[in-house]
Length: 243
Image: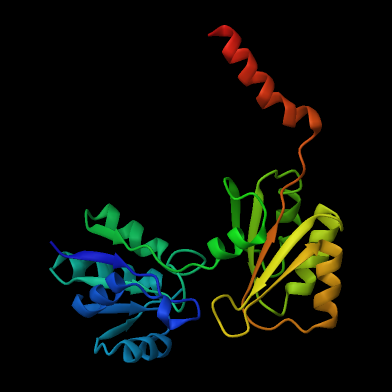
């Protein structure tokens, strides 16, 4: 039976694509691309001749059923986004859900995504974290951030260069200017950079250095009180005593 393959693509450095991803893109009957021009460039770089179909946020509601029917009829398909893993702040969820509901097998390949490298190199705890993706562009930004005011896990956001300064200003209002933050831009690319410090320090940096490129902002969680930090140890002691 044919499948839908979810295939991550490089977020910058084209060498980051996996051998498995290359083999799948060669083997499938068609590739669904967020931007066919971007994917054409990648496939040409890989030496793959492939029939492309457009699949993006503006047409996915109208096309998911047709795609699912093509797969059910025996044609293997691969879904890619412009960069990273489809479905993570990119189109993909609707098609995956449609295929799952239709009993079509979905196979997701591991691969590139911007949030994990930014998280790991931030220096913040990454055993538990909260991925928020893109904040609303206008209405609802402040309200959404307010819901995270007491979040103790490390938080990860995507942002465009045009709203980085505004985003950091809002972080200062909600989380406080002394909260630690790590801002990575252009991950895996030639001008990759990570700026770390307090929200106030990093905000000042990007006020004087024009933000350029793709951004991932990683914010330390709200510090736990001393009592809360001590409670897990106390619980462990109690468990030993009961044993």
